[in-house]
Amino acid sequence: MNQEELHDLIAKQQPNICQIVAYRNNEKVYSDCWNDYKADDCTHIMSATKSIIALLIGIALDKGQIRSIDDKVLDYFPDYKVKRGEKTIYDVTIRHLLTMRAPYKCKGDPWTKVCSSDNWTFSSLDFLGGRKGLTDEFNYQTVCLHILSGILYRATGMKTVDYANRYLFEPLGIAMHENYYAETAEEHKRFTIGKTPKANIWFCDPDGLGTPGYGLCMSAEDMAKIGLLCLNKGIYDGKQIVSASWIEEMTTPRTVESDHFRGMDYGYLWWIIDREKKIYAAIGNSGNVIYINPGKDIVVAVASYFKPTVFDRVDFIQDYIEPFICGSEIPTDKV
Image (cartoon, rainbow, N blue to C red; front, side, top):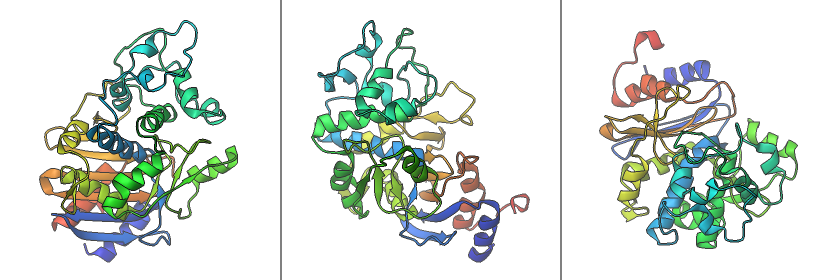
């Protein structure tokens, strides 16, 4: 199969894909676009944003701005008033947030209550804790992860996007990003589900803190740079951007006690695809993926517009993109 045939196959079978970029042995070996997107256009990468936040937390740790991921969350919010009767929140740590094992007093994400409040961080803290205590159960959350942006701000004095620009995006040659705040719920919805290209923006709260669970917009090319940084143990263009020890710790698998996530394990806001082969990925709704296979020195980035029936594209990458860039035949039953 040549690149033109692969282009047509993807257009037919994966119609919401906008861009794919792949690297092997640190060389770009594949790049293509669909749906009238250009190479430098951005999509909303959805929950893959979480994995970028994990890198920012690691950088803050390396700089000594965050002392430890075992710090209590409330250490960073001495001005937050805990609700009467709430005790569990005092024991919740940053590690609980990074591993999705923090307890919450809600089922699902409390989008309306958090996103209609004046202070998204404190509103998220209102849901943290509960009568069950620290259960160590995997509890996947998006909106309440806003606590991590609050911690980053309290620890560094910098808004999420500014910290990312200075210490992650600029060193990687990624275009500087700006905050984007939706004044209305309708604007918020349009941002989330819109199909047209987006600018280099990061969705934020009224205080300018970027949402850590979703909201970052990137091109597949820039997503691939994040992947290369991780593949090369925190080094990019000869410079150590984040410590190798953090990359190792961040991608150490922890078992997910749920059947809802296709048998994957979890690190610090990164999905672990294969424990033995140490394959891992940033995964966002609609099939936005940064896929890293250290054994084959491969990074694949897929940027897509919103399509709610697509969770991840790991199988697609392994069935089509990896064989193509490795010079292997794509199985006939996949064509």
